[in-house]
Length: 275
Image (cartoon, rainbow, N blue to C red; front, side, top):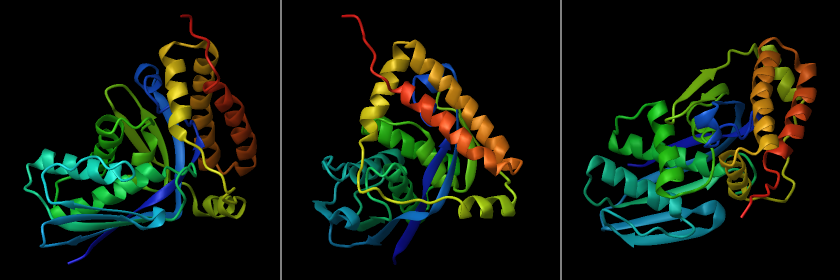
């Protein structure tokens, strides 16, 4: 038996950063994103030799463990170990034996939510293999908990939900990890025209989103005036983008993206904190 799962990568179109705590907890966040035809893949092959094998093909990283109820966190494969540990703990499972192989169509640090997407893909494979009672919201929330709480990885909430639900979504974020995903019913001719006018390409560079997000969260915690105002404007941008897509006003999207980029740069600006 072989179990396969995949989850789509996403592009952020508006509101990016307003899903980051503590901003979303205090003021509520709003984001519009869309998934593309690029994916993270996960394959589970059950074994009967008392071994657990992790093989991340795209980053050429391999690890092998003896079956146990808890694995040590591997530096390069922390997501693999974190997912396994949480599932075994959550459902009281005995030590499992399997090979988990993954591949992602985009490089790490590309800004397309690769870490969260591969987390969702791996969870999807485990859900299918073990017949776990998890729906879409459950999978996305569990992926968020594993990344942000168990592994203490800095980031927001949008990526896990984009990878789980797919398509064009207007997402709302509130306190106590409340998330509402609103799928958008955009007319096909608008989507086709948008696809014709968009180009996605790799610049050959990557960035550590965790560093940027940590700075944003720090600004929010200290109620820095300009970053907060910028975040409020980005929430407005998400609503503007939603209306433009639903009403087919595609000519306005360039201006909306420019509006968001201007305010996005203000959100992670350096903050002078009194000592």
